[in-house]
Amino acid sequence: MEMLRPHHSSLEAITVLAAISSWSWMMQMGVLSRSLTEAYLRAHNLLTTEGGDG
Image 1 (tube, one colour):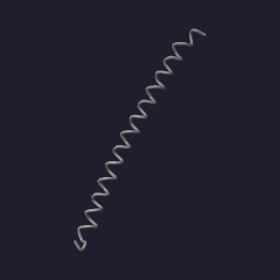
Image 2 (cartoon, rainbow, N blue to C red):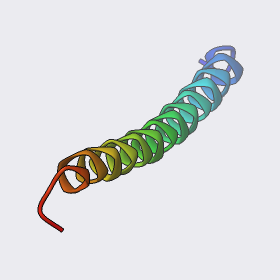
Image 3 (cartoon, helix red, strand yellow):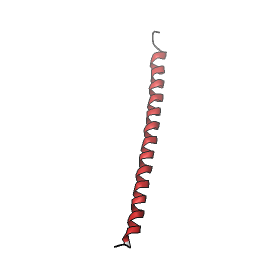
């Protein structure tokens, strides 16, 4: 049973690193998505108010 211990520890380390990497990637995609949405809404707002009565 002691022979399986190092393998188990390596698997845990790989799992933790994969989870951290996935979380980091998800956060970056969230920030990018939010930035693109804000840019789209600003451009849409400029287009709709540009030809208005104002």
